[in-house]
Image (cartoon, rainbow, N blue to C red):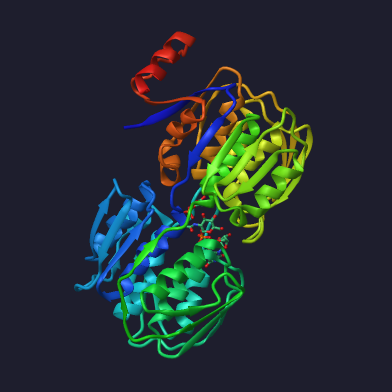
Length: 441
Ligand SMILES: CC(=O)N[C@H]1[C@@H](OP(=O)(O)OP(=O)(O)OC[C@H]2O[C@@H](n3ccc(=O)[nH]c3=O)[C@H](O)[C@@H]2O)O[C@H](CO)[C@@H](O)[C@@H]1O
Ligand SMILES: C=C(OP(=O)(O)O)C(=O)O
């Protein structure tokens, strides 16, 4: 069923919001469960997201026994049976992140075949660094019929330098190396908190990984791995998205249990723009101000400003007084949300990897379509401060990474409804919107 969000802008956000476990942590950790030849892997604080369901389908196809208790947000996995080695296109095309099953399958079975992931709306996204790492560990890689096949009767530890600190390549190579013979040292690795969470989970499974969170990871290969219990870290991007939403509406919101260290670059930019940020044991409180100052932001690998907060940040910059600059260095094509924002009265100029954002913007409501996950969140944030009604379509992207986004916003005082596109009346009036809101409650 195609659905859309309708947002009635103009409400300040106030209150407390809970954050889920991190999508980008749980996906590779689900894939890591393939490494356990005995015992169950029990993951809690698992976010209920379409990407998690897709990864579950991939693992099911590979013969992993799996149960997802959505009430307790726990997934129990058992990969001790005979595993299949083939991850077909229907799943990989749904979600690029399914490529991270390649490393663990190769380590466990000595063979893996995974559909080659295509590009997506944010860039071409090659996987050459993943493959280079597997080859260095002794795998032979072939590509045919749209599939990549990796074969290695034995993986042997080695020294690998990544040309770029790719998150997915770091995870994939790290997982392949856990069962390799001897020591693997990977230099110039990604340092994201999700890498640290994966390393922690792997170590609980019997792996010997040190250095996650630094530029070099060292893995002493072990012979076998087993299941473990692990709780997924909080989603710093979901937390950051609510920080921006609170700031732009001039609200006062506690993002409960958000980990401030994981959002340092965002918090520093918010403060620079005049937003008050209070860090405490309870989480991060954002207190918005009547006006925001313009600022410059450049996305970088962690601990730099996250590209997954770029779209949301551009909306905040557009709301600020004066001209702001955003430079995107991680993905080549991540400005697609801006053309939709233009339909809401945004004024900007894209110059290569950078965009000049001319604020302050008086956003007006319009029907806009999300082109990717964070674009969806950005359009909703613009809707929160737009006059009239904003309709955001293509919610399949939003559902990849946000659990009950509209309900959480409503809990903070926003007016957002989620409706079936077919049933929705073309012209929203205050009365018809009030009816939709009441029906949703
Ligand atoms: C599921 C998940 O965790 N997704 C995150 C992960 O994606 P993902 O792991 O795909 O991102 P990478 O860090 O690998 O990609 C970053 C850049 O490196 C390039 N590259 C990557 C691999 C490779 O072999 N060759 C290559 O050229 C990519 O095209 C891109 O331009 O990190 C990104 C960067 O923080 C985030 O935006 C994504 O939300
Ligand atoms: C780009 C993202 O995810 P993925 O790598 O799964 O596309 C994201 O989470 O913003």
